[in-house]
Length: 199
Image 1 (cartoon, rainbow, N blue to C red):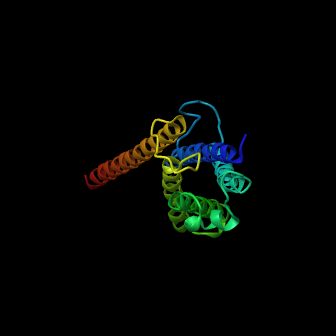
Image 2: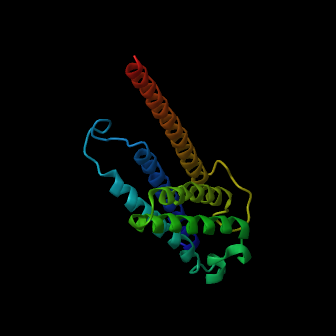
Image 3: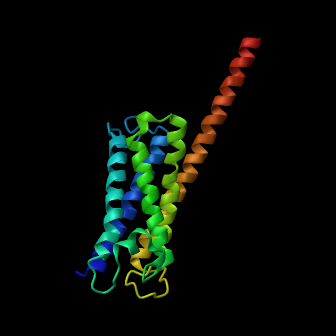
């Protein structure tokens, strides 16, 4: 297996891990209870969420490092840390690097969460969505062979990244709708209580 092919596989693994991490984060955000809902078991998905975040960061960092050992493309350390001047696909690689740095920020702030206010941590934690967008753009627009070929939107790897995008988009919409429903229910409950206390 060539280094560039291994890098592609590691990049896809990072994409899948980040997607799983975001989906678990959405469940945490709406306080989903796996004991009272499916799968009706005690699952510590907070711990799984943390570990998928660490693994996604590790795979995201390993993805460009493997390219350094490729005989097909000649990347230097500078080309993967600040890829604006990389020999191949500089804009697309910069999107990937920015996604990696955003993921590192999210993981670091989660590690030091106890030292931050909840509001500050939460705002920084939403950077995960920006990281996902950057990763998905990198995955969709890059040429896996690094030959600057046109994007084949029906390529199996691209379709799997497109599926990740759709899953996260659907989960985000579901989260917003769930939050709005909870707010409406709380407002109705408060109005009822006010009406009962007034009468």
